[in-house]
View (cartoon, rainbow, N blue to C red):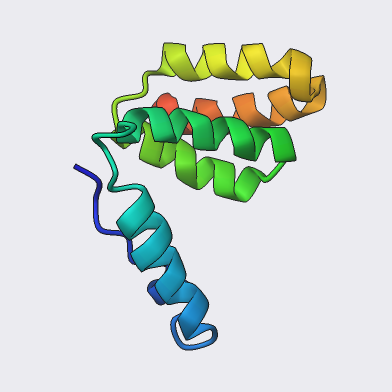
Length: 108
Protein backbone atom coordinates (compact mmCIF):
# COMPACT_ATOMS: atom_id res chain seq x y z
CA UNK A 1 0.00 0.00 0.00
CA UNK A 2 1.38 3.37 -1.02
CA UNK A 3 1.72 5.84 1.83
CA UNK A 4 -0.33 9.08 1.53
CA UNK A 5 1.99 11.75 0.20
CA UNK A 6 1.86 15.28 1.57
CA UNK A 7 5.24 16.63 0.40
CA UNK A 8 3.63 18.94 -2.14
CA UNK A 9 1.38 20.64 0.36
CA UNK A 10 4.04 20.56 3.08
CA UNK A 11 6.63 22.29 0.90
CA UNK A 12 4.68 24.30 -1.67
CA UNK A 13 1.09 24.42 -0.46
CA UNK A 14 1.17 28.11 0.41
CA UNK A 15 3.32 29.13 -2.59
CA UNK A 16 2.00 26.93 -5.43
CA UNK A 17 -1.16 25.27 -4.15
CA UNK A 18 -2.32 23.83 -7.50
CA UNK A 19 1.08 22.22 -8.17
CA UNK A 20 1.10 20.87 -4.61
CA UNK A 21 -2.36 19.35 -5.11
CA UNK A 22 -1.34 17.76 -8.43
CA UNK A 23 1.79 16.31 -6.80
CA UNK A 24 0.01 14.84 -3.81
CA UNK A 25 -3.38 13.91 -5.27
CA UNK A 26 -2.66 12.99 -8.89
CA UNK A 27 0.96 11.83 -9.09
CA UNK A 28 1.20 10.15 -5.70
CA UNK A 29 -2.52 9.65 -5.14
CA UNK A 30 -3.86 8.40 -8.46
CA UNK A 31 -0.79 7.19 -10.35
CA UNK A 32 1.31 5.62 -7.59
CA UNK A 33 -1.76 3.91 -6.13
CA UNK A 34 -2.32 1.80 -9.28
CA UNK A 35 -0.55 -1.15 -7.68
CA UNK A 36 -2.55 -3.80 -9.55
CA UNK A 37 -1.05 -2.51 -12.80
CA UNK A 38 2.48 -1.98 -11.44
CA UNK A 39 3.57 -2.51 -7.82
CA UNK A 40 4.96 0.44 -5.86
CA UNK A 41 8.29 -1.39 -5.54
CA UNK A 42 8.66 -1.51 -9.33
CA UNK A 43 7.52 2.11 -9.66
CA UNK A 44 10.25 3.04 -7.18
CA UNK A 45 12.95 1.28 -9.20
CA UNK A 46 11.77 2.95 -12.40
CA UNK A 47 11.59 6.35 -10.75
CA UNK A 48 15.09 6.03 -9.28
CA UNK A 49 16.42 5.03 -12.70
CA UNK A 50 14.77 8.02 -14.38
CA UNK A 51 16.03 10.46 -11.75
CA UNK A 52 19.58 9.10 -11.92
CA UNK A 53 19.54 9.31 -15.72
CA UNK A 54 18.64 12.98 -15.50
CA UNK A 55 21.09 13.73 -12.69
CA UNK A 56 18.29 14.90 -10.38
CA UNK A 57 20.07 13.90 -7.20
CA UNK A 58 18.00 15.70 -4.52
CA UNK A 59 14.88 13.96 -5.84
CA UNK A 60 16.84 10.71 -6.26
CA UNK A 61 17.68 10.69 -2.57
CA UNK A 62 14.04 11.15 -1.60
CA UNK A 63 12.96 8.38 -3.96
CA UNK A 64 15.68 6.00 -2.78
CA UNK A 65 14.22 6.39 0.71
CA UNK A 66 10.77 5.63 -0.68
CA UNK A 67 12.20 2.66 -2.62
CA UNK A 68 13.69 1.26 0.58
CA UNK A 69 10.26 1.53 2.27
CA UNK A 70 8.80 -0.31 -0.71
CA UNK A 71 11.20 -3.23 -0.19
CA UNK A 72 14.01 -2.43 -2.62
CA UNK A 73 17.22 -3.85 -1.18
CA UNK A 74 20.71 -2.40 -1.12
CA UNK A 75 21.83 -5.13 -3.54
CA UNK A 76 19.09 -4.24 -5.99
CA UNK A 77 19.86 -0.51 -5.83
CA UNK A 78 23.58 -1.22 -6.36
CA UNK A 79 22.68 -3.30 -9.43
CA UNK A 80 20.39 -0.58 -10.76
CA UNK A 81 23.15 2.05 -10.45
CA UNK A 82 25.80 -0.26 -11.93
CA UNK A 83 23.57 -1.06 -14.92
CA UNK A 84 22.76 2.59 -15.52
CA UNK A 85 26.38 3.73 -15.21
CA UNK A 86 27.01 2.50 -18.74
CA UNK A 87 23.94 4.23 -20.16
CA UNK A 88 23.75 7.48 -18.17
CA UNK A 89 27.39 8.21 -17.34
CA UNK A 90 30.02 7.24 -14.83
CA UNK A 91 29.89 10.52 -12.84
CA UNK A 92 26.15 10.09 -12.31
CA UNK A 93 26.78 6.59 -10.98
CA UNK A 94 29.36 7.89 -8.52
CA UNK A 95 26.89 10.49 -7.28
CA UNK A 96 24.09 7.93 -7.04
CA UNK A 97 26.31 5.51 -5.10
CA UNK A 98 27.05 8.24 -2.57
CA UNK A 99 23.34 8.74 -2.03
CA UNK A 100 22.61 5.00 -1.93
CA UNK A 101 25.27 4.46 0.70
CA UNK A 102 23.65 7.00 3.01
CA UNK A 103 20.16 5.57 2.42
CA UNK A 104 20.91 1.85 2.56
CA UNK A 105 23.74 1.69 5.12
CA UNK A 106 23.30 2.96 8.65
CA UNK A 107 25.87 5.46 9.89
CA UNK A 108 28.94 3.83 11.35
